[in-house]
Amino acid sequence: MALTLAANIDLLFTEAGDVPARLHAAADSGFTAVELWTTSDRDTDAVHRAASERGVSVTAISAEPRINIAFPDANLNAYYDGIARTVERAIALECPRVLVSGATGYLRMKRSEQLKRVTEIFAEVIARTEDSGVTFMTENFNIRVDHPGALLDRTRDAVQIARDVGSSRFGVLYDLYHSMTEAEDPATELADGHDVICYLQIADVPGRGEPGSGNVQWPTLLDVIRASGYDGTIGLEFYPTTATETAIRYIQKLVST
Image 1 (spheres, rainbow, N blue to C red):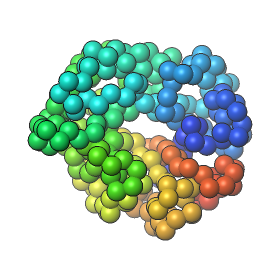
Image 2: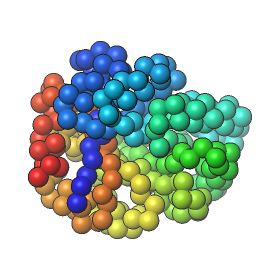
Image 3: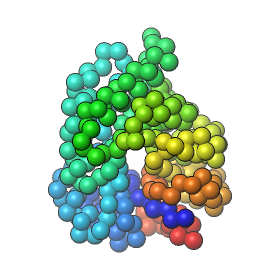
Image 4: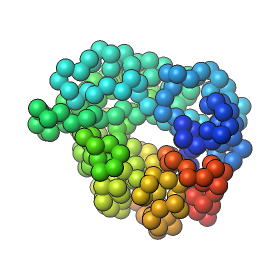
């Protein structure tokens, strides 16, 4: 079963220089896909030109600006305007997916009410972008190490939101680093969310370094991913502890075998 690795070029190949240069470096290292966090501060024409020249696809970008939409007084006009601009950049980059983050928890509102509010906002995002062809996805974050206070800290909540949004254009980015940091079992989460998980990201645990830098048994975990039926893109969203070329070698070899 084929799996495609996408290099996160906000974290990897930074030695190469700007984003187009990083994209060229990723292509030189065998990648046919990359992902980005921010695009509002980048020359999307230059990025798209570099991607086209090298036959590399941009698989995912993040919606901007990041606004805490769970707060009752969040400026949703600014949020929806940002979504519209992000969609324009996604289309310009021929990028099929946009990540919309959950929110930080709000202590003065019940968790169930916050999750309902976020679900309704994501459903509105789908309605407002009906003709775009872009798929949106949300992600849960670990609160133990990296994102204290995040509202979506469990995979099951992100999965339930995606099901409640009820659109083929809305799914879940399942980040195995966040999941394992929260002591979740990837086999269980992949099975439970199989109908809405549309993208994966990985990093080692602990430390969020490259595969091989922590305690994860990667051959076993890749077997779990393949056994789940997932055969899409896996984003390499990690902080390399060494030069990128060295950091990517182990996971590239495992995926290719």
